Image 1 (spheres, rainbow, N blue to C red):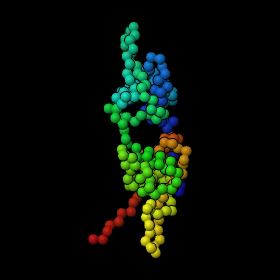
Image 2: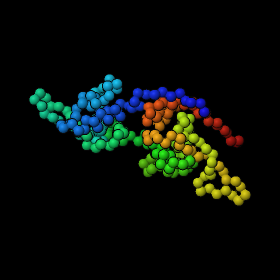
Image 3: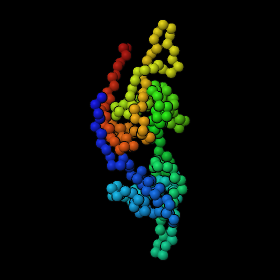
Image 4: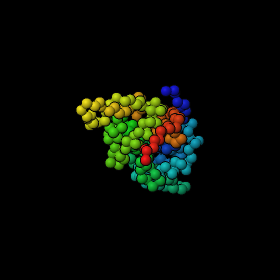
Length: 224
């Protein structure tokens, strides 16, 4: 297939990721950190695009999630609002809503991608859906198919017709029914590519945006 047009985004990081990295840098300050402290820790080339209000809003969401705690430092002039990091959840910015609840959108894509990397072998849709499903976010074969179709168009996976449905035994005298399997092509990417609208795949690992042409499905009608 021809190479898809790719656009590289600066650093491949959104505002929340940049803010979170700045918070982790500021967590060792003796008396806590302020909103301006966080902004000062954001790289210069990205700082102008992130307002203090954006940082403050994310800190409030993290507070409601129990990840940061607000502090009040008394000074000679006026109280100073500070924050302290209570739970360092690692390099990826916590995905929380304004009320502190977790954002689950994209969880299924992450589970599918993780399954492909961990099992490291061609998988049918049925196998992939079964291994990728969790109680909180079950993965259907239809969901897996849509994600894999986008990943294949962007060059992250390859489709192969090289297996039969797991547990299926062909009838005597008949050949086994071959079903598509999917094989991961790019193993060194820990973060799952994100399918965006309009149809595109964003790679948060390298900051690449792969534009995908719409997939036209053939629709057939059964005779009445």
